[in-house]
Amino acid sequence: HVQLVESGGDSVQAGGSLRLSCEASGYTGCMGWFRQAPGKEREGVASIYRGNSNYADSVKGRFTISRDSAKKTVFLQMNSLKPEDSGMYYCAPDCRLGAVNVNSVAYWGQGTQVTVS
Image (cartoon, rainbow, N blue to C red):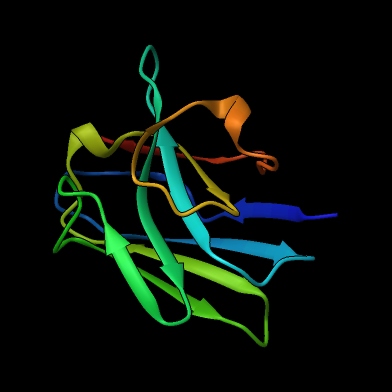
């Protein structure tokens, strides 16, 4: 059974930075960060697997995903934040980028809110 706990979300001004954390127990495979703004689809923005990372074009060069396997934690460093980055951020055992069907992913955490103004 996979358990996911996200944290680190906050309200920041445009241009600011945040670091999100995801404690992932029971899973060591591909992990992704997803986000969902009100009225929009949930979308994958970053993924990591065996040291290789991938990013959606919208966050490339600003976001960095990393993993501490010993601590079973996946991080998302977000720099140069924009208002369009606002939304609920989730981690999940899935490496797809772009829009995803929420029901197509087996596990989701409770999410952490990011608001950029």
